[in-house]
Amino acid sequence: MAFPNEKDVVMTNLLPALMFAIVSVAASPAWAADPSADVTDLQALRNAVKTDKKAFIAATVHLTPDEEKKFWPIYDAYQRSVERSNRRRVVVLEQLISREQQITDLYAKNLANELIASDEAEVKARRTMQNRMLRALPARKAARYMQLESKIRAAQEYDIAATIPLID
Image (cartoon, rainbow, N blue to C red):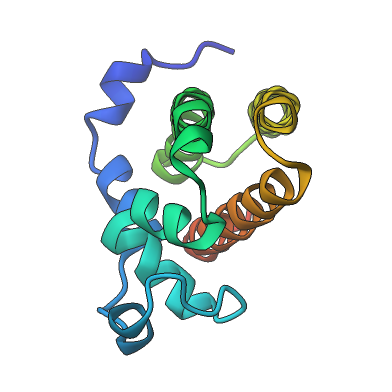
């Protein structure tokens, strides 16, 4: 099965719609009062990430200047990897949403395989990031960041999943 060029798909209306679904929330009073707002409050977490993810992470992880020098390059590399996985996922989801005819079993199998491959690429990136973080930071701060990133990704995944229809 051939998928269209990623650049062509990204330029469609799906990417803005998915990105809007990921980050569309109103400003939160919890974020205004404290940038490291309760990360168990999903809406406050969404608001904080939408406003300024890096500032939110910095305020929540409490890095020293020396730790910041090590942390941010690892963080940036991980975010680039996640973005590549997201683009790959968008290609598949766009195929699913824009399909006008019935989805065959073979087509559904190919879509499922591509989604799993995208997930696997993200897990590999997360494992690499974790190993680098544990070498660069005290274990508690590394674990705190990994928990925070996991919560952020879970909220984003939920928002995307809520907008994608099931295959008939």
